Length: 377
Image (cartoon, rainbow, N blue to C red; front, side, top):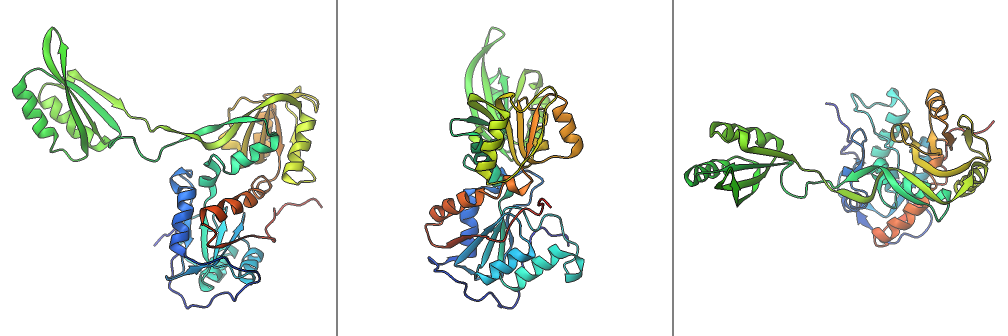
């Protein structure tokens, strides 16, 4: 069976107590529920795999939670040494469906087996955390300066419709007998709700306007009923939109309160991210002294979010050679920080958020081993 979750009943062999005091204890499922509430999985991209990915058989108490950008073998060694019962890995360590799980099928499989056998839970928020108003992208946008304003490039919507159903159907009925018969049948259709009738005047006659909400599936039955009763031509269908969530979504389009030179922004970004270097591609016709007013920001690999966005500068972790050529050819400069360097610093922010969100019940620690795999040589 193909699975994107790993839940196995294994012997209770776990890490020994690690150094440092713990603040309390929470059950794993309670911690996972709190993490889901902080960064709802519904905000994640459709292709992502977020939430509780590896759950040791319950009961499983969590005293120490380790935060990391990537779960690697050295980071798992660190988690075990420091007594972590749960690892929050920003990037999902379990991403693609599994057909088998053996030590011989790759380093990721070995990691998952070791975590499960050691009774260490694994949780990943990834793009759900990117979308938050105080999430990864908002944190990266702050590298441009405190007086910068920003809006999401791809806004998120509420996770549910404001009313039951995704469509609104409105139609007009003239005769009272026909209205009564149609309403009786409509009310029996599953997934139809919020039926309202209002007096109306159409074609010089007093009539009744009926409004109802329904799902796309139910709409087919509703329209079939209206067609049978000769009301199809008097019908309007409205597609209901989920409301936008304020300051929530993928990427950030930033406007600087005062224009700054590209060279000045490079220094700001390096200082903010604590990096000795970034990679730069100058837009055609641009120089280090070109004035920057707008910056499109996306942590990690930003091409899919930044594509087509009008800005003076793109700030992201990585882009391919040909993607960079496409952008600079349009006169937009590009700063690349390396993928995880554009995300890792947020873990300290997340640590503070979780101390409050988990009510100081769990010891929250940040990996000291986690780092970007690319280095200057």
